[in-house]
Structures are given as structure tokens and as C-alpha cells.
Length: 614
Image 1 (tube, rainbow, N blue to C red):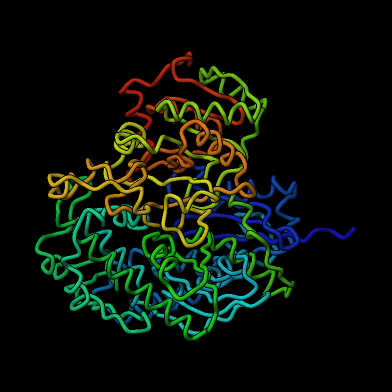
Image 2 (tube, rainbow, N blue to C red):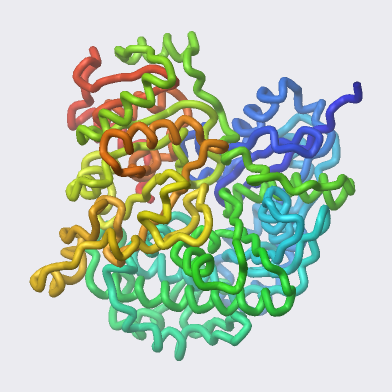
């Protein structure tokens, strides 16, 4: 029997550091560094994620056959030097801040990573957008597909399109820095008071509360949109080109006031700005997709890059776009590029064949560290924390979770291999009853400790999804938003119809109000028996009790905290919040039976202080 060949991909040093391991070309495991360090978006070298991958394969770093990094630092350096030269003396402060590290570290990145790993083996350097493209195409279920990548910036590229066939990818065209769809959306994220590379989800969630009154102004002054979706940003309004901030005083003057300060009240202006830039983004994505389809003639599209996580735009594309079906890498951002780089090297450099797998090659995206049904180490840790539990068989546990949710309880679940990517998909999730009109605000304010306007997503049995949503294809990774069907909607009263802003949150929109956003949309996760058998069983039990085949699913964490990874993480989050019940492996914890009790307010504040606000 021949020795297996291992390829380990790495993304690091910008945001969302991660590692992914292939064994003979198959995805063995993958994880983000933040899940281990508990620092959201951790950009440091992913020592913990790499150690997890090596332990999962039961190998050492010296037994990895090929190492690969997700982008090319020399090309990135070329972009930075060109921009600093063109924008001097404005760029002087940025130059002094970044260049010493480039000259002492980043330019010698291969050597630095070899030192971090304790190896002498060469580390291949990939290409940022090719890594995105590989992460989207190679695990997809399609033999051939058009490819579209959209993000802030890689080396020079900010968006690319091309085609994947069998084991090869060809990228045809690109948009180049400083013109960037991702940076355009991030500029509005910053201006409305949210954190770049984190708050884009908030901007998207805020959009339905506003009106797109600034859309024409954005098109006229900020961005020129071509028929093929190419964009040209008017740099008179931006400061990221050689500066240290996203926008400048002209941008503020255009919209009548300075940027909103983080954590200050959200006004109607921020809601309207969110609605306006979301409409602009929808237009750009749709124009890009139509152009890509015309140029490639493909029936299927795969996507990656941070903009592919905007479920409003991708949902619109899935419903009304020119492709029969789209598939998005669950870890569409830079973390996913660790996997993409490894797949690029395996297929395109080493020239190994590819066979498209059904339903895809991602194994439900459950690729991370595992919490087993029963584990002696977890038992000891949970006991030391004051945990008291009962152990149940899987069928009994599924039925009990469903019954607790039907009673209005909030149940957190941490079991099996954790998810790869930013979405909790049932392995590290907080679950609730979608029928409750109060559940959204309760879970936001008392459990997640975050803004009340943030929407929650539904998990729905795949075979029943069309009864609740105008859904055109499966959505197993919660990456597409779909409208709630007309027959599920509730007509607002005259008084309710005249409400505006955050007051819209008070209006139930359907017979499952906790997952219906104010624009009647929902970020749908379809649950099938192949990818997610445990949650499929919970939903089946819940439907038998209530007649409703869906539940709320949100990530198991509080604001600013990475999704919980270990049994200890899960228990600490449980006792710090108002979660009613906890499942760890096959253990069930009820709040009133815990010997340690809940954290008091002072303890909770100290614990929450560990996590920087996102």
C-alpha cells in the first residue's frame, strides 16, 4: 500500500488565519485559528489550526508532503510599493507604519513560515483569487462551471471570473485595485459605525429597515458601474489609497454628517445608507453574473471571496439570475483560501484528476475539532466547571431537544466536528422556536448581547422548504436569502404599516415571525439527511410536535466571541447567558440543575470583556 500524500494549505497575516489538510486530494479537516485562540478574526500564524490538522491525520509537520500559502507576498509588495509611490507624500504615514515589517518579515515570508513550523521544506506560494476560485470550484458538485470571485483586494485583483473544467481553472478577466466592490461595501460598513471585515453582516441586516434614498447619489458620485459589472470608484471620496482610513471628509459632506461613531445610536441615516449600498451591490453582482454567463456559456456558477457571503445578493442571484444553480464555498472569505490553495496545488500543480462529488465534497462543512458523544477529558472539564448533566441516546436526545424548543426553551448544541466558515450549521448552534414573536429580541439582547435588529436564520427540512420559502435551490450552508412565501405572511395593520426604522422589529411578519426579517426575507439553511443527520432528526421531531418543520439557528457565541469550539467554551457561554439548556456531545444540561449556577452580573462583564466588540 502506497504512503498517503498530504497537502496542507495556510492563510495568515491579514485576517481569518486558517489551515486545511488534504489526504490524497480528499478534504480531511480544516479550521480557523480564532476558534482556538478565542480572538475573533485572528490573523496570527495558525499554529493551533495546523496542530489540529496534524493531530487529525496522526502525522508530524515533517510528514506533510506539500505546504502551500494562499497568496503571493512578492506581488502584494509590488502593489503596495506602486501605490505608495503614486500617492506620496499622502501615503507617508501608512508607509512608515507598514514598510518596516515588510522589509524585515513579509518579504521573506517563506523563511518565516519555515521557522514557525520548524521545517526546511519549500512552501509553495499561491495566488489570492486563484485560491478563492479553487476553493469554490474543486469542492463543488459540478464537472464544469463558471467561476466568480469578489472581495476587497488580493494581490492586485479585487474580482475575477473564469471557468473550471475537470481539474483545471482558467481565470479570464479581473478588476484591479483600487477599484473594488468589496472595498466599496466596506467603506459604507465603516461609515455607518461598524467594524470592517466583521460588520458587513450588520450593514446587510440593517438594510431592510431603511429606504434606498441614496442609491442614485452613490451611482452618480461614488461608483461608476459598467454593464458587465466592472466598477470604477471615485477616489475623491476615499482615503484607503495610501491613507489609514476608508473614507474622507468629502464622503462625509456628501452624506451630510461625519461617520457614525461605533456603539452610538443608529439613526435613520445609517438605515437608509445600508439600504442604498445594498441595492447598489445587488445591481453590481447581477450585472457581473449576467456578463459571466454570456462570456462562458456555463449553466452553473461557483463563487468565493468575502462578497459571496452577502446572502441578499447571492439569494437574488439564485432566484433571478441566469444560472441554473449556484454553489458558494462555505468559508468564502480568506479562511477558505487555505483550502483553495491546497486544492489548487493538488489539482493544478501536481495534476491529479478530479471527480465532482455529490452533493459536494465539503462533508457538510463539518471539518473542525470534534466533541464526541462521550469523552473522559470533557467529562472531567465539565465537572470541574460545576456541570451537571444526563447522558442520553441520540434518538432520545433529538426528541428531548425538539420538546424543549417547542416549550419555548433556548437550546445550545455543541457536538460533532465543528463548522468550517463563519456560519454555525448545527454543530455549534443556538436553537429556538421560530413561532415566538419575542424570540428574536430575547436571543439578541439576553443571549447574544448584540444589536436588537440582527435577524436570525431558519433551519428547515430540505423536503419541506418550499412550503415556507420561495426557494429555487438547496441552501445547506446558509448562504442564500429567500422570501417567505405569501401564504405564510401576515398583513400589517394600518398602524404597523406606518412604523419605520427599528420600530419595524415589533411587527410580526409571518406565522414564523422569529426568522422573518422586516422585508419578509430569511437566510435559509436547508437540512438534509446526508449532510446533517442529527439536526434532521431534531427537525423531524419538532415537526411532529408542532407541525412546523423549521427552527431558529444562530451561532453559539456572544457578540465579539468566535463560535465556541470545545466543551469548556460551550459551558462557559451557557452559564454566562440566558440559554436554558445545553447539549455537549450526548450530554444534556438544564440551567436550574447546575451546581455552579449562572454567572452574576460582575462575572459576566469580566467574561464578556475577553471579547472585543465586532
